[in-house]
Amino acid sequence: MANINEIAKRAGVSVSTVSRVLNNHSYVSEEKRVAVQRVIDELDYTPNRLAVDLIRQETRTIGVIMPYNNNPAFDQMLHGVLNRSVEQDYTVMVLPTKYDLSKELDCFNRLKNKQLDGIIITSRSNSWDILVPYAKYGAIVACEYTDHPEIGCAYMDRYASYLEAFRLLRERGHSRVAFTTARGTESNSTKLTIKAYKQIFGDYPPAYHIGDCYRLEDGLRAGEQLLHAALRPTAVYANGDEVAAGIYQYARGIQLEVPEDLAIIGQENQTVGIGLGLASVDHQLVKVGEQAFDLIIQKSKNKIEIPYKIHLRQSI
Image (cartoon, rainbow, N blue to C red):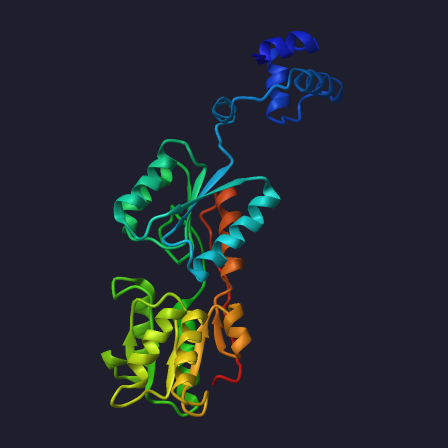
């Protein structure tokens, strides 16, 4: 099996020149580069990836922590990361955790063991106090705001977006407003949603909050619970357009009109919501993923805010 010593001998160059060619260093004359590449092609030589990584002290591989890989919001962020990774010739390793604390730490140990150059966190279960020490092993970027100086972040102002969505419903005459969330009250997103709700409406009726909502089937469940309540809500803010679509489908199935009987706002401006004409709070998650990737390869600890948008459609 060929090695770089044999390549150097056949090409009439030094071993260090072969190494520079393999690692795309610029300090090699075009004549020597062509000679080395010709021998590499003749010998059908494939460099040992691990050895090359050790020489370069980088893997050109980025890990993306995703609790679930069939969730439209996380998929949008991953799509943004992949957009940039193709442009920059990086490999992306998807690291699903299901919000398991130990699985998440296993991912960070990949960073510690130099299997990854950096990690992008789309959502996390461990506290920052546990995760921040891993920043000494490689770049860490969050897709949420954090004020830790060692962690860069690409984020959107979720609280402001929730406030605006609830304020919009109130301004349109709604006082009985329900909402759905994904995780329980341990989730920062859920905490912010409840905080915004209380600021706009003052009261927080637990019956108007349906958790564990991720996809269309969960929206059907939420619709069944909410729309048969003794005091039926007149509006719902759903934490995703798939969830909103399930609520819409259930409402229409029991002969309720949208928006006359029930106003609906979804989230993330996804295809199903656009097709049904659902209003949506768009956190521009593809852009969040793209910016997170840019920060990770720059080893930047900057805090970059991505503006949200609200798309007004006939559902409200």
